Figure 1 (cartoon, rainbow, N blue to C red):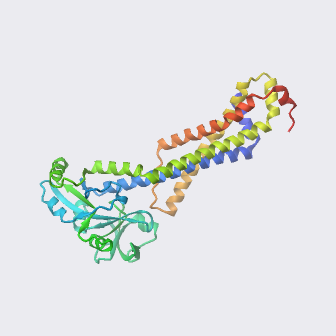
Figure 2 (cartoon, rainbow, N blue to C red):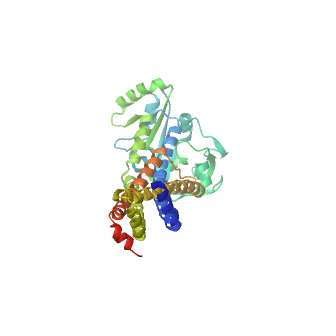
Figure 3 (cartoon, rainbow, N blue to C red):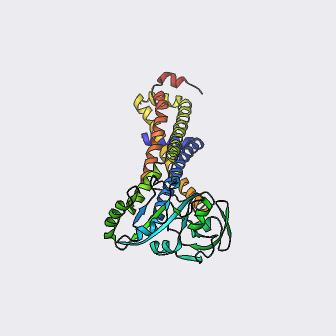
Length: 369
């Protein structure tokens, strides 16, 4: 009987019920979209780094695994020392620079010959390798997002480049320029911010790392899996991003709480006479309170389902507007957000439900709104 009464109450005022559920749905969608975008960009960056195919990463002293925030550099001549170490197949110096043109990311300044040796080369969809110092290679997602093709001009770092090739995505960056040009633009000649190393076999990785540690004692040296794991953790713990995500979750939860509170408070006020009838028929305070709590939870559940639907719609919209934005929607976050929506709904309904249960039957029957 309780469940039937709950849904009867919901359908009795369809506009208010839809509005309340939709507001909770927006709470859910806001959390899932923002968290999904931030987590997705981090995971996608890690996958592209893994896609290069290197076995070892070497950074300059005092550098950070948070690559966008690291400005330390080292001499490219170190690559010659590394190449002479037994077990090393190839090494490539890279100069990383943060970019906001056409979407946030890192521009990679690369030495094409050694980069191809480490990564086994790009897969070109159109165009070809660098031919001039002002050439730039972009991946297919970046090209599609910015409606670019081979031969177009692209302004990066206040300098005009010509697109010479479009490659399949998944190898480090979305934008590549010659390392010599990058060094010239930032004023760091013969410098690199990262060395990626390929070993002749996987069983050689520990010995190469050990020899590098003895030769370059102050340089951070990582097995690639460890480097990617630390880079992912550092990005997730990045202060501004972490605080922004937590703020969005908190604000969205508070919105859900107040929406349910106002909706249920108004509902109780309008149904005082009905509450009196229930009490006169033998319903105790706890039963009446639980009817309103169940109604709030039902609205929260409906709102959650609407929110998931809005999230998937938002994902499609983001993909169409900006293909460079990668959205990672994990089952854990969906379940967690659902629990958060139900929690905010139940907390928001506590006082209205308590107020409903405490209504005096005689006063409630005499009430006329």
